[in-house]
Length: 102
Image 1 (tube, rainbow, N blue to C red):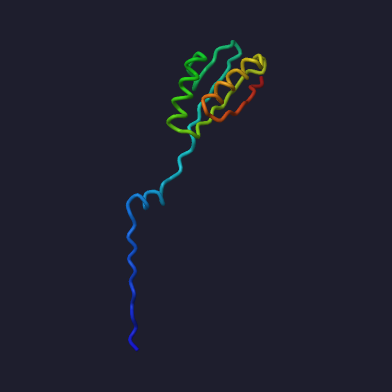
Image 2: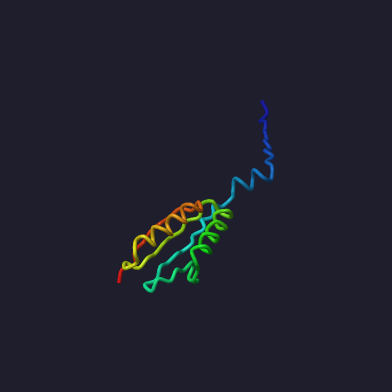
């Protein structure tokens, strides 16, 4: 009996091929820092609480998996840190708190 060769051709849509090989990007990370003198920074730029909230909302709209890391001087009043953490959570981002030790 002669040998038969069967060739299967699988046609995939371009969208399927792209989704199969799409690289997963890391989430957007914003750094919020309370300096010892009370200045609030967002990614090394001085900011207000209102501007911070707006920037976080914009980031979350662009990337719902946005993470905000909050660094605070150990002498910063905890109420201020909690207030910023609440703003971050209300904006829809994940929060990570870190204390800066001398």
